[in-house]
Length: 122
Image (cartoon, rainbow, N blue to C red):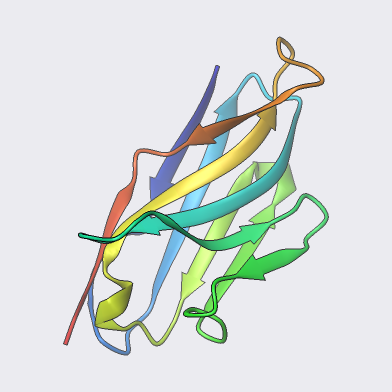
């Protein structure tokens, strides 16, 4: 019922920037928290940044001051602006959204994007 479509991943040099976008579509009544997660080879998936429907944000300590998460509720879109990228940021980045649909209301369900590769070279 819900699909998340990501864009903006790619390869950059250390110190460069990327902006990831994720658009949710489908049978959506409301979207609560949205976030970005990443998984690097040999590491567990970790939360990078989350943002509530009201705009409250949380960041992993490793990205504070470099990454900014934002959302446009009218467009059902969440963004991740990534600046001062480091090789350690190399990972598959996943978009996540907690969505209430007409069929599940009032229960929310987690939906995930397909993942997009971010590669930072030194």
